[in-house]
Length: 550
Image 1 (tube, helix red, strand yellow):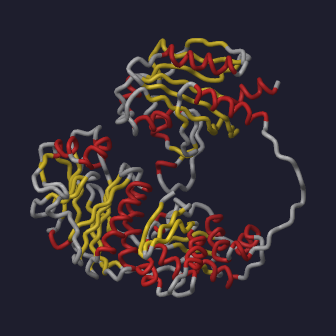
Image 2: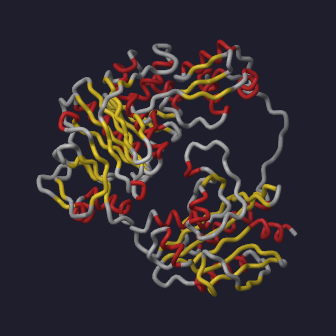
C-alpha cells in the first residue's frame, strides 16, 4: 500500500479550498485512502488502491478533490505542444530496455517542497508501479543543460561519467559495483553486456537507466524552471502511462508541456500521448449494480466528480489519459458508486441466515500450505494472469491449453496461468541477488482449456535452489506431503522438456497423473538467467481433494 507525505498548505493551494482534519479524512475515502496522520503542516496518507498510481502524489489528490467539491469537475485539462526535439533509440535496445517516453516542461521555478513532491512521485512510480525499477524507471533533468537530439543507446561498461552526488568519474562497471544505487539495482542489468544510457548531442551522458543520473546534466536544483522528463522500461503501456501521470501533474502545477518525438528503428511516437479513452456502459447497468435509480444527469454528475465524463446519447464513459486501470464496465460503475457516496446508499436487509464453516476442500489446501511452511519454504502470492512467453517459451514446452485475454492492457498479463512453476522461476530470477538456499512455493488456482471445456484446478508447486539441489530433494518433499495427507500414490519416470532427462517422474493417485517432480533443465535455467541448480514439483490438488472426500 503506497504511503505519501505532502504539505497541507500546498494541497489546499492546489485545490483552492481549506480542509480541517475531518474534511481530509472524509475526502480521502474518495481516493480509497486513509489519513495516517498530521504533524504540523505535513500530511501522511496511505492509499489502498494500487491500480491508480496517478493518485500517488499531492497533485493527483488535489485534482480529485477539485472534482469532488465541484471546483473543477470532469476530464482534467491538459495541453501538449509539439516540438522538434527527438529521442533516437538504438536498434539493439529491444534486447535490454526497449521503450522510452520523454517530454519537456517549462513553468514555475522549483521550490524545496515542489522538488520533494516531484522526487516522491518519481520514486513511488518506479518502486511500486515499476517493480523496483525493473518495469519502469524515471529520470528528471534540468532541460537547459541538454542539447537535442538525445540518443538512447547501448554502451559498454568502460564508458564513464560523474554519477549524481559524486565529484569524480566512474565507469559503468564501477557504478554497478561501488555506487549505492548501482549495488541496489545492478541485478536489473546483470544479464546484459551492454548498458542503456541517455546521451545528448553534445556527447554528455544524462543517465544510466535505470540506475543513476549524471551529476553534470541530471541534477535538478531549487530555482530551475525547465524540466526534461524521461521514462524507460520493458512495458510500453506502463512507460507511456507513467509519462502521462507526470505530464498531468506538471500541467496542474502550471507548466507548459512540449512533446518529444521518439524515433525507434521501425516507428516514430510522440510522447506524452494524452488522448482520453472510453468504455460503453448502459444506464440500466449502473442502476442494477449500484442498486438505486440513477438518471443520466446523476450518472454524469457522479462521474465528473471522479474526473471522468459521460455521454448519455452514446452511453460512453470517458476516462482521462492518466487512467489505465479500466478493464470492464464494472470499473466505470464503481466510479459512479464512489461519486454517489457509499454512505448515501441504504443497506439492504439480510434475507437468509447461515452459519459459516470451512469447506472440506479448504482444509486440504490449508494443510498443504502449513506443511510447506513447516518444511522451511516461503509462500508467494502471484497474479492469476501471465503470458505465453513465461509459461511456455522460457519453460521449453508447447502450449497445453491456454485461456487468452481478448483485450488486455499489458502483454505481461495477457493469458490466464496454466501452471505455477514458471511463476516461481520468474520470482526466483528477480531475487537471485539474495543468499541461497532459496525455497519458495505457491498454492493457487490455474485454468486450462481441454477441448471445449475450461477447467479450474487448485495446484501446489514448490522449488528449491542451492548448489546441491537435486531430484531426490524434491521427491522427499512430495513423499512427505502426500504421506502427511494420507494419500496413496505412486511414481513413474517420464520425459518433460523442462527437466533433465532421467530426472523427472509423474506422480499418480488412483491411476491418474496428479503432478510431476524433477530437476530443472540447464536450458530452462539459462532462459531465466539462473546459475544455481533448481529442483521442483507441481501437484494438481483437485485429485487429492477428491481422494480425501471419498
